[in-house]
Image (tube, rainbow, N blue to C red; front, side, top):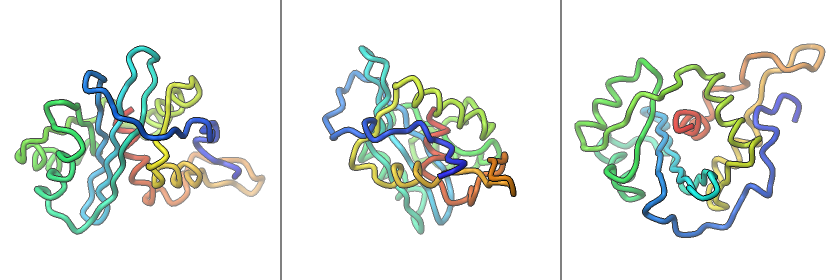
Length: 173
């Protein structure tokens, strides 16, 4: 659709799942929220410099210990680097850290710069998505900018609050 933010994402980037080698660099992105906490897990193939998004979650009505327990099932905190939350969400990061799963403040706080980082991975062919990550794939097809009367994209993201997994991806990127 017009205004689609990740318009360069293509079906060939969706791949069948495979076992992630332990030696690959692992990154988790976390978008905190009481009703909608989202996580995405990525691993980098060091030979090809390709990032594989291999796991996603979106859950609410869970305590911090429950969210952390779910994150541990995917990958131990000692084997991954986690980034998440907006700059002001220091309490969420502190709560996860207290549960033994440190989450760092993202290196890039600006939404547009984060979108640019993800776009760069896509445009350079360095992003793949496991077929099982249907939530991210669905959000990719709906994440768009508001159009003006002339049909041109504006800076405003349509229903920005609905794309928690893509926010987690931005934090990881």
